[in-house]
Image 1 (cartoon, one colour):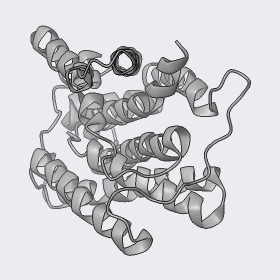
Image 2 (cartoon, helix red, strand yellow):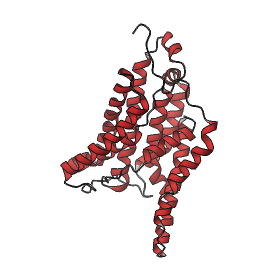
Image 3 (cartoon, one colour):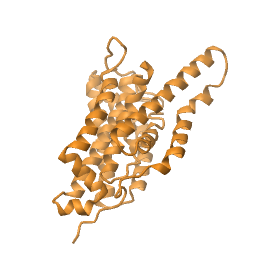
Image 4 (cartoon, helix red, strand yellow):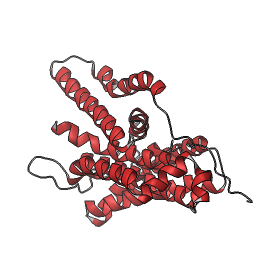
Length: 289
C-alpha cells in the first residue's frame, strides 16, 4: 500500500486533467507532453531555488503553458485536437531533451533536486492530495453551477450557449486546468519521487492516465480508481523485478511491461461499455462567426 501511494499521484493528477478537458469537450492526447514539461520545470525550479515547493509550482505552470498552446490550436484555429495533442507530445520530447542538455550539460538526467518532505510514514503531501482531490473534483463537477456548465459544454454546447455560457472561453479554461494538473503530475515524478529529472520521464504515464480516464468513464472518481489500479500494477512489477534480480533471474524486462500490458487489457475489455461526452472532440463554431 505504501508503494501504491507513492506511485499513484502522477497518474491521478494527469487522469483528472484529462477528465476536466474532455468533459468540457476538448480531447487532450497531449497529457504525456504536459507531464514531461512539468517534470522538467519542477526539477529545474527546485534546483535553482532550493525549494521543492517552488519547483512544484513551476511544474504546474509549465503544464498549463503547454496546455495553452493546445487550447490556442484546437479552439482558436480549430486544428484537429488529436493531431494537436500528438504534436505537443513530440515537441515536448525534443525540446525538453534540448533544454536538459543546454542547461545541465546532460542528455540523461539532471543534477539532484531538492525533494518534497515526507512524513513519518514516508509519504509526501501529494500522496494524500491524490486521495482528496478526486473527491473534491467529483463534488465540484456534480454539485456546483460551474461543474454543471462544464458538463453542459461537453454534451450540448449549443444549448449551453443559448443560456449565456461562453463555450469557447470555458473550454479554454478547462484545457488550462487540465495542463495544470498534468504538469503537477509530472512535477510529482521529479521532485516528489525521484529527486531529479530523467530524460525518460514520464515514460508513458500520460497515456496510462488517458487509459485511466477512459476506463473510469470520464468521471473523477472512476479515473482516480483506475489510476490507483495502474499504480498498484507498477508497484507490483517493481517488487517482482527486485525479487527476481535478487534471485539472479534476468526477467526484469518482462515485468517492466506489466503496467502497460494491463493498460491495454483494461482498455480492450472496457472500451465498448464506455461513452465519451457527446461533444468531445467536436469543434464549436459560434453562430455568425
